[in-house]
Length: 625
Ligand SMILES: Nc1ncnc2c1ncn2[C@@H]1O[C@H](COP(=O)(O)OP(=O)(O)OP(=O)(O)O)[C@@H](O)[C@H]1O
Ligand SMILES: [Mg+2]
Image (cartoon, rainbow, N blue to C red; front, side, top):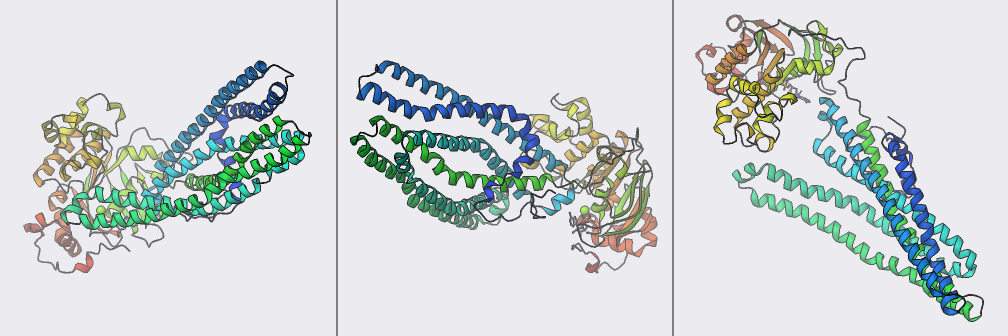
């Protein structure tokens, strides 16, 4: 953490209050340097070009004034050279402006791309514990608008800076012409500034409110659309519409409020400079009549008044922008400062090929600050063994699976793969060797084929490779894939919404299989698949890779009996282990757990009908600790 960051506010921390000086603290720009640095020559170049453009900008009114005095009011010089000169200045200024704006915008968008990439990469590197803590949706939308506001600031800040410089230059030129007239011209500017600040102080909080309420409206719409089937099946359409209307009304209030503030103050802001024009005409006219000033100066000063008010008007806007950019940058840094918990060891052990030997030694683990969920798990799984893990709901089976592929690190104790502690192996190595297939797999909204080959980018884009077909066959997915018109190119809808639960599970199995891991953990991964199909898939899995270590987390007797050994996870420890028949014979707790956790379809199975007391729901505590 750097001194820039308010201590541990979390990514969703509340906005800091607005203070006028805050926008000008620029330390955060320094932190952006790794991204800004490579752009420095473009920025410097653009800025220099901008300076030349603004010098011309300031020179034009004076040249116009001189033209009037020398070639129109008197007949001292010819008009044509002045006109040609003015036209040349205008063209030069126009061209320079193009170059300068192009440079700045290009830089700002480049920085946007780089920051976005950096942030995205960082988010993908974060450990599961990070996502347990933050609200993902908010994080993503925040990241979008935060990057945006930094980009906007980077594009606009130099423009405003040059406007300020042109202001100073113009004042110098004006003072050289006439001090009293300069005072008259700038007389109204403090008023412009005061109104600008008032406008900012009212608009700034409103703009945050609007942003929040916009997100509310989007949230209601997005969630209702995502859950449209639930909404329809419960006849909740009008309720959702009402909720959306409520959110929309709240947004409208904020928008109208913003409009009202603008309507009141903006005309004042726009017309105040006219007071300066009046004063210039009054004082200037008198000076000209007295013969103490040329008439061209009045014309020039009128043009300067317009030039002068620009930075004053935008100063308020600029301060809002910089305050917002700073707050945004800090939130971005807050995310970038999150150190992923699961990282490669400094000195990783390289293992040429894994055999799939797993060992847990006195493993303790709990989520966050919660109590220990696993309280000293000891377990050895031999290469090629198929082990079923049985335990009541919430006993920590999925948690154990996550520890085995190092999604989390244990609080104490060690998980070893082929004798090496997981934390001493490169993370990518662990993840490639140990793959968990969850019961509700996530599919990407690409095609069937691309989902299957997700872990094998070498097979992507080649059409359905032979390997993909074989795997689809093995997991019994080839049938339904080939029955579709486009086959492997069939899109799966958002998160696989066009597929059945069992089809999704088969795709996820295939996806894992294509990576060909030494250890395959099926966390209830076949729960939606027919018992007979499941058996067929398991036979195919055995054929596909002899000697693969397989861990089955099961809620079905049919699945449990596929394993050569059963491990009973109870009360945070391995309570017993043996074959299904052994455990059934000797462990009352095993019979109890089976009776309460088996799926309804197999729950009536004769084998589970052991006469033990199944009526104790308190043991089936799925509740969080
Ligand atoms: N990411 C998490 N953060 C905090 N607590 C969690 C998290 N994931 C699971 N838990 C809690 O840990 C306990 C064990 O969860 P786990 O998913 O390992 O159980 P399980 O044995 O797989 O249950 P089931 O058979 O229902 O799938 C539960 O009480 C659950 O509420
Ligand atoms: Mg589970």
